[in-house]
Length: 203
Image (spheres, helix red, strand yellow):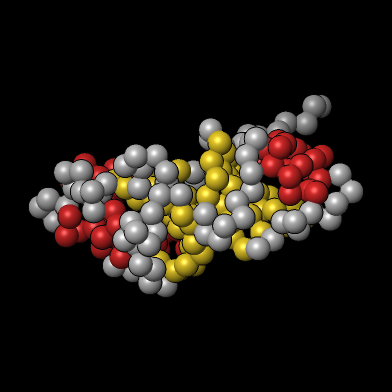
């Protein structure tokens, strides 16, 4: 008898919170927009920024790995986030992590490069709207004024005492990505909904 493999639908860490996030967005009158962006590909890359592999990997990905601290380089749907002098996080569309890994490994050749798929470790929250910065400022120690943390910036920081990677997206009005470990995603979502109550009509 042939083996039967049951396909289990993939479930995001915040699947159960989608309704609450959508309701808060609708009720805020444009002040805040909250949503999960599940299953984004996330590949951690460590290499010598001054070595030959850095240029080769950049060419393979179609973007230059950012060398300025806490900045983001974007090419289409692909982004490279600076996490440290020899560390980046490459973020792409869902289900592209294997392709990204293969391209990075092939480009690095014999150079010493560490490539790790961390897609399953985190999910991504979108925080946008007219009061997005004010909402995040309730729980983030960074100065989020556009002069200090403008578009195209990123940082490893805390939000509501939770370790996150915060990204100020570079599309007009696109707000922020909050990359948070899956095990803390529910807690952080509850905190965001509570902190957003002052912007929600009838709350």
